[in-house]
Structures are given as C-alpha cells and as structure tokens.
Image (cartoon, rainbow over all chains, first blue to last red):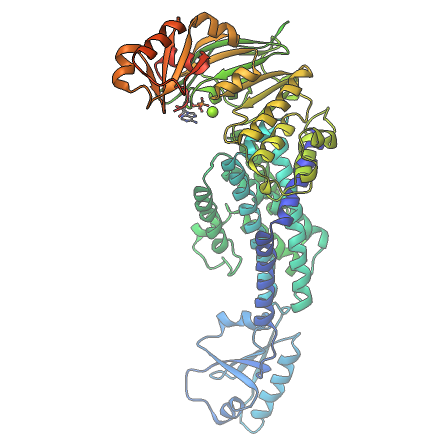
Length: 338
Length: 294
Ligand SMILES: Nc1ncnc2c1ncn2[C@@H]1O[C@H](COP(=O)(O)OP(=O)(O)O)[C@@H](O)[C@H]1O
Ligand SMILES: [Mg+2]
C-alpha cells in the first residue's frame, strides 16, 4: 500500500464528483427533497390540537355524546383497546376512552392528556357512576423520530451502492481502469482510494442532511453523536464494499444498474426503514438480518431513540464490521481492471 | 547492446481464434522495434501481453531477464491504442495524478513544454483535439521517464501534420536513449521510426529484420507506376504482369529500360510515369498476397 498513489486517486475522484454538476445536484437535491417532504408532513399545526381514541360497541350514553361533541378534539374510532394502547404510550393520541366500560387511559407525561382528561371529567360530571382512570408510561416518539435514522441509512445506501458500483463499471467500460493498471497502482490501492473518497463524500452529504433536518423539524436524538457517527461510518463502508463486489468484474452499465437495483430495492423495503418488522413473518425477519441496512437502521434507531450505548448495539456493529471485511476481501480478489 | 525485452513462443487465444500464434523476438536496448501489420493481425494483443496487461496462454516474456514485475511497472511507459481518461479532469491534474503513481517522475511543466501542451494545461481533457489528446497520452506515457516505451498505433486517425509532429517527438525520445516498441499499420511510420521491423499477419510474424535489409532480401527490382487509365488492364495484365491498386498500375521489373521501351512500343502515354523502389507495402503484398491497408 502506497499512500501517495492512494492520495492521487482520491483527489482525482473527489474532483470528478464535485465537478459533475448533474450527479452532484442529484446527490444534494434528493436529500433536500426528503427534508422538505418531512418538514411539510410533520410540522404544520393541525386545527385539531387534541386526539382521542374512542372504543364503543353500543349506543353512546348522553355524557359520552356530550364529550364527543367537544370542538377542536379529533375523535378516532377504534374497535379495541389493547392494540391501541401503544398509541397512548407514544403520544400519537392523547387519550383512549372505552365508552362501554367507562375506562380511559392517558399518558402520565402528556400535557395534552391532562387537559383532555379534564374535559372528559367535566362532560361526565352530571352522570351517575364513575369514570375509571388508568395511566400508561412512555415518551413521545413521533413517526418522524422513528423514521429519521432509516432515512439517513437509506440515503447512504443509494450513495454507496451506485456511487461506487456504477462509477467503477463506467471506468472499466471506457478503459480508465486499463490505463491505471498500466502503472504501479495495485487493485487494493485503487479500491482503497475509491472507498475513502466515497466515504468522505457520504459523510459530508449526510451531515448536511442531518443538520438540515434538525433545523427544519427538530427530531429526537438521545444518544451520543460519536456512536451515531461510528454506526454511519461502519454502515457506509459496508455498503461501499457491497458496491465493490457488484462492480468487481462487470463492464456493462446496464447489468450494473440492474444488479444494483436488485440489491437496493429489497433493502429499501425490508430493512425496517419505513415500517417496523415486528409483525412481519419470522422468515422475513430472518432474511432482513442479512441486509446491512437492517443493522444500520436498527443501530442508529437505538442510539437516537433510546440513547443506546455501544454495548447495546455491539451485535449490529460486529455484523457490519465482519461482513465489510469479508466483502472487501472478495471484492479485491475478484476485481478486474479490464 | 543487451536485450531489454524478450518474448518467446507467445500464444493468445480468444475462443477458437488464435490471435497471437508462437510469436518470438527480442528488443535491443535503445532501439526502436516496430510491429507492422494490417488491422486484426494481432499487434495490440501482442503488445498488451508484453505490457503485462493481458495474460498470455503460452510462452514467456522477460524484461531484463526476469518476468514482468515491479521494476518493469516503474520503468515502462505505456500508450494504448485508445484510452479514456477520467471525466472532469484537466490536463495538469491528470498529469499530476499519474506522476504521483511513480517513485521518480518527470517535471510536469517540462513535459508540457516538450509535447506542446502548455496552453492546454487548465483544459478539460475531453475538450482536446485528436492530436492534442495523443500528445497528452504520450506525455503521460513519458511521465515516469521510462526506460522502455510502448506505443500502440500512436498516429492512427491523426492528420498528416499531427502525425509528423508525433514522429518528431518519438524520435526525440529515442535520441535520449529510451527503447521503443511500436505497432502500426502505416508502412511509412515503421520505415521512418524503426531500426527493426517484424511484419505480422494472422497472429504470426512472417518477416523480421531491419527495414532496408527486409527490402533488399526480398527485392532487387523496382516498380514502374502508371495511371490505370493510361495502361488498361487488357494490356497491362497480359503484357506486363501489372498489379492494379486503387487508380494505378504497378509493373515490377528488374530492367527499367526494357519495360519503358515496351511501353513506348505499345503507345502507352508516359506522362504520369513514376519509378520507385519497392516498399514495405509491396513486401506485405508479396508475402501474403494481400494489401496492408484494407
Ligand atoms: N478481447 C477479445 N476477444 C475476442 N477477440 C479478440 C479480442 N481482442 C482481439 N481479438 C481478436 O484478435 C485478433 C487480433 O486483434 P488485435 O490484436 O487487436 O489486432 P491488431 O491490433 O493488429 O489490429 C482480431 O481478430 C480481433 O478480433
Ligand atoms: Mg490494434
């Protein structure tokens, strides 16, 4: 390994990235669109400040009807209590009322729950019999907080797979690699430079997204920034190495494109970025564990939402580190200049 | 002078096609060696095996007596028949990049001066003309101050002026003591630049010597050349055994006086008559029954 050669390749690749306006625009625009999309979807004050879940199998009694006619509360009909309690825990609704048994649940830490409770009690003040109160616990976790780690992971995935895979295949197709192979540069030096260059670019671009998101929508981050950075670095390297293996031999852009899409779309939907895999078929959960993005998303989510430490996510880190090493080894072994 | 590069019994197959078939030769240090042959003869395949780019299916290649290795990589300068450079990079940047690949590199400004690239240093490499790009590729091949320089059809596709320029530059490199291996399908190029020529066809070397020695060995006659319209085929072929190429008739003769006399006797106009020595194109035709340029 000769660092001067790696540096020369690194610099040239970075120049190309920065000067390639259309792909640079794409790399920055896509995240900005995501930011704007999320900012729009998750801010915007709705006129219904309060949300109450209502479970009722029979006709509502007069007091319940009176409560239900309270203005500025949005009532959502549910058919059962159990599966919807988690919504109270996560502050997705402020109060859950079972009209049949006159029981209600509120979150101990929710100010909205407190106010809605007062309104409920007022509505029932004239009625015979009592309301039964239950408390649940849980911090507010908005979907935004939950999805944010996965969005960054997904963005890294696209950038890593296509930024490495596609570029190397093009270099090979047009003979750029062949010219480099006529110099003392080794495959390992070339690949290292590509990994380093892509890693830096991914980190810079995703840092911008992170800061941008923070500015617009203020999401939850309970863990250490260092740990989060570590997860994203390991994740980036892992996905870059996936790209290297895909691009190790082929010289057709179409084939590369097809293969990369074949890798990335399942990851996009099966890695738990957009929805939780908890309810999924056990086989699918097992399969998801084979996807690097699953580990990146889970680890980043644990850090950001629960403030997990390195020990808590060591399984994910270990999987990412070991598979990176294996992928890099394979990629370098089967790599072809021509 | 010692041998710098030696190949013996080199073989390369692509499926059922044997592109290079038992090729052997040696290159003397400081000389310019030419591989001359038509398109598809196997020149590129041969030179790329010697550069260590393609793996031979048989035979050996030795650089200073040893298999190709790190010393070879550091001392070889290579110019491919066609090369793409990375996008969005200027002439200076690509030269600097390649100079960092080697332990001992030439000064970029000096190289740029020498190959008339100075005014393009800040320009995107994709905006260079054909001749400028070839000069850049040659400069890049020279960036490590190579002991041996490989040039694969360096002037194919260039206009005559740019070709002359490139020849001058190759001769300068040569004058500084570097060894050169060059492939071409231009007879003039091989004749002009090379001390030694191997003529290649269908993957084999069919003749190999110094240019003049090659001609002397095969020919002790000259060519009388006329316009095809002046000497119709009906007369030329039976009477003079003339060969027709493009628009001209070529009569090979050992006795020019006699031939001219015969032409006069048949009232053939001699306004466009030319007499020339036989060249490498003739030699190729003689050896293979086909023309070099098809
Ligand atoms: N990669 C390849 N795959 C299959 N056939 C090839 C390949 N490269 C060259 N050939 C064939 O080998 C023969 C020699 O090619 P080449 O060495 O490029 O000839 P030249 O350089 O003299 O024009 C040609 O018939 C060519 O079609
Ligand atoms: Mg060729």
